[in-house]
Image (cartoon, rainbow, N blue to C red):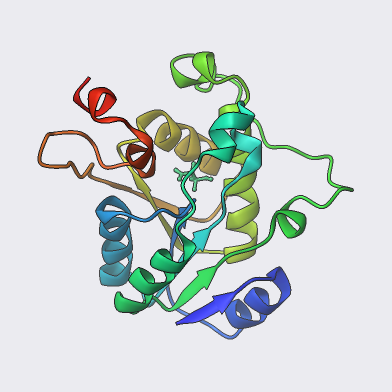
Amino acid sequence: MKIFKDIESFRDWRKSKTGTIGFAPTMGALHDGHLSLIEKSQKNCDFTVVSIFINPLQFNNIEDFKSYPDTIEEDFKLLESKKIDVVFIPSKEAMYPKSSTTIVEETKLSNNLEGESRPGHFKGVTTIVAKLFNIVQPTHAFFGEKDAQQLRIIQRMVKDLNFDIEIIPCETLREESGLAMSSRNENLSSENRQK
Ligand code: PAF
């Protein structure tokens, strides 16, 4: 498994590859839901790239950002055991240099539901996903149906900005209790988990 921490070395790897590239963008704290996206990519594509980047731009609340689970060592072990080709784990400085002033915004589907309760969240998601698409240049990208609104917005963005990428929706995986698997579940108290 190759691990790239900077954009240039990832690009060198990418230039050397032909065939299909499947991409699963993540913010780490990997669980079986992520693994199902990865397995789907491995089944359908010649190479699979997983990115891990806790994207500050999509957190409208600093406390939420600070408490987002960071399990990088476990994530690496898991990805290694799944024989992933490449993990891309850029720094915040690489993705958002101080000079950067451009964002990507979807202006309709982002306004209601989660967009209402988390102002600016989807702007952060579309910006980082567009940047990752431009760097990774996948042929296929895998997104969970759990984040249904995110999935629809990404599909819209891909159409609107003419990305030549097939977005593959992946079924929600659930814990035994029925709760949808999510990195944030780690932060739930047993009472909140029950709720
Ligand atoms: O669904 C997520 O984990 C994130 O929103 C994503 C797509 C990796 C962008 O940071």
